[in-house]
Image 1 (tube, rainbow, N blue to C red):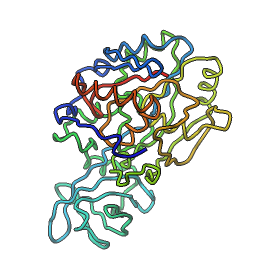
Image 2 (cartoon, rainbow, N blue to C red):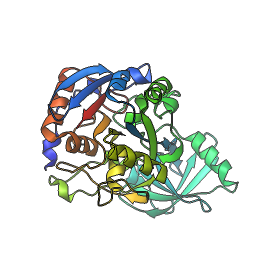
Image 3 (spheres, rainbow, N blue to C red):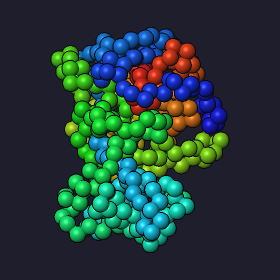
Length: 350
């Protein structure tokens, strides 16, 4: 498929700048990919589509305060530093993105905090915007991380144009987030409240967890028209034996297996064995999913409404069918659904 097939006009006022007041009360569009039927609901009504023995798979990655602002030595120029991942705990090496990158070269020092208490030195160039920083801090690692994170802010997506507020640290995070490592929240999981999870549990719906540390690469522009030539950034992921047993049992029993979010769908697709069952996995995935694609484990998907030309939109279209999903997006724009991480949700049934 071609990149231009995923272009659509999205008015700025439909990009959610704030979440719904309550997690489970955003709007929910339900799309039946077999019949093409589309219906409109409140998110907590998702309960009506799952029964005893069904399984929902969640991503329990935890977002950390990845965006920092520092000053360059001598010039004092303000530099945005986006933490991606820690490379070496002992030496305090971090893989980061910097903006404006043209001002940051190997050997430069950056100062963070009101009293310049945290200092980092640029020791390598990795990409046009990528750098490796060495933080110059002599204290224990736990103390270093605590101070570093206190200087950072919640890494809201760039399409959320307002300033970060204190409460974003809670709302841009699922209530079951546990394993730190993401710089992008798995947005579909943000809609699940404790009450909704409890009601699903009472109904007999099982929930399982995998971990995929969602990275900045999800927002990287695709610069090729032919999608077969695009290469995804790698993301670290973990699928354990407990989830494998739960999912394969449900699948063999004819039950519904639901991926909560495109990150889960991608992780599951990366951990499928030859017989179409899920297997344990620990490592990295750079799988890029776009139509057509044969999904063998999950038969339903919860997802937010994604930006035009995004890899997440392509994955949803691969799952629900290109024509069906693009028609649903057209309706979503006309019905003024809210798009993005803080926006409304879609349930795709197969």
